[in-house]
Image 1 (tube, one colour):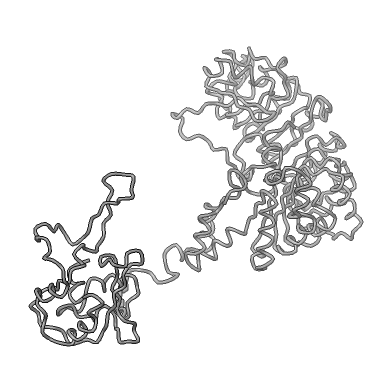
Image 2 (tube, rainbow, N blue to C red):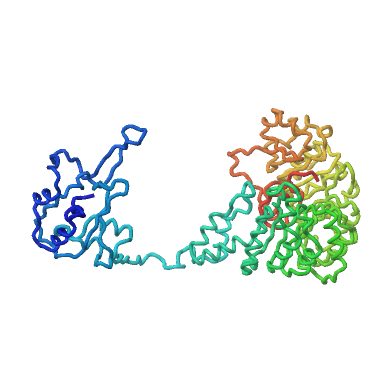
Length: 640
């Protein structure tokens, strides 16, 4: 405490005399004050280092431990400061000293208080301290906002270059561009599935009205449900604020894992977070839904009412994915809605029934004729029939078609469908693969008829499991000029496959034909039909084979059977040729090691892959999104 504090302070026993002194203009002398105090002469001033008190802490276990106080040890003296300035006007303000409870005789640790405001106290500033009306204590009280009179805040001049509210450059961007910027901050699924996500977006909601609106759209446009608690939270929000439900365009359950929070089915049933009733309520609150992505972990929640709502109650729904749903309850629910009055056409343009192996043929015969807007159709592993396939409306424009492992389809109907049906003239993705160990769809003659009728728009073709001969290479060569993915059938030799990448060197071949050779465009080659015993590794890694040479580029990935992974991973020849071996689940690949001298590596992203970057996907995506969850498992981890 600075020296001005004790300028007019005296002991409480002399309160009446001090009050009268405050009203008098003459200033008492230092000697008179010391005589009144009854104390001895203070120590020599040369021994006073400062007005702050530094004391040892006796109760501390540490030596050299001190405390610092702004109350001087000399505060018990009644010394008054000497000031030559004129005395201030007389004040009627009274003060009171309150000693500490633990040391009632102490005059060091006590405190002086002014009288209450009702008695005329106007704040510390009004207390005269020998001609000065503003003490340091007033500044401290002002900083704490507890003074009686707060000075007016200084007015800030507006910066003419600073934009007004809602007029910053980012806020004046078009809503479409601003939305795409904010979409980069969206985190659909946290790494562990349960931790907080989209924290940045929560902060962005508080920035401005314009960003608040754009951020809400980014948060609620595509909803990803990793576990039932998130679903319950989302349902509560849109039930309380129905406007939020109108923003939702996608409900994505592809990352849903019921064991994330609950280890047993009984625990999950007790919570009642995700049930057929709550799912139906969610669909009622999202009238503008466009994509519904389900999978086998929620198949029991897809009852007849939910399916009826999806097919008949959402006019803007364009994509439905029931990947892996094959339970008895799901099959019975689908059969029950077949008895309903179906409309002549459905708005759905992307449909996946991938591995819905229990659905009867009547489902496809009822559903497919009503899909006049169809562009993506995945029927892998289903019981679709020839009649159902041919019943697809002619005005459909199918670009992605997956008919792998459809055992009820015949080769001649598929060939006729691909050759004559107008809905498949613009195919980009076509999978006709089968598991050769249990079923064969195309023999030699069927392939000879099929390959020439395939459209030039194809970028991915799977003939896995078919029976091939060397003459089919000549038919496939024109396709390799626009294909990026090709899955070959059985019984070909390495020398036959090598002819897809280099022109023939026989003397009988015309020189002009060699000069007109157009390089291939293949990025991915599937040889997984060849077992470890059937694939001739000596020829594959030999000098006369170009398949693994550098000039076979842009070929980047060769899929092999997973039985070869351990053997190839230990082979030094693989690394010497500039390749490496990777695996995921039941699949294994030879991958070319990128040379920085060749420039930037192809990311693998293509518009027709709809968000996937890996090569060789075995499930058609229904929505443009990053691949993950159960869909990623079906695309890149499981066998055909």
